[in-house]
Image: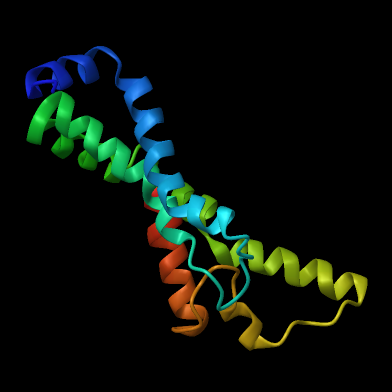
Length: 146
């Protein structure tokens, strides 16, 4: 059995490798059973989002192993730090801009508008919460998970 100090020293020396290995281990431990079982990711079907949290959990784990609580605190501070004026984050992250662009393209090409309920269906997402629930789940899990 390897002692705790040896693990910490190894993670400190090989942070990027430890992050990648832990990310793949955590993510694929959620996805592998779905793949082996031949599951199809469809609305209301198997829930694959926990695997998207692999990178976040790996980053927190590596920070904790390498630098303890200070490392985790520093990582969380860097994740929430604003590095440019707020207006640019609003421009880059605004789903309304993308929504408006898609609506314009659909109107210009004469394509039919999807039913509003379709915005609450997403492959691998449970059918609860509608569009607002899906937006929250995607923002939290995809945004911070990946």
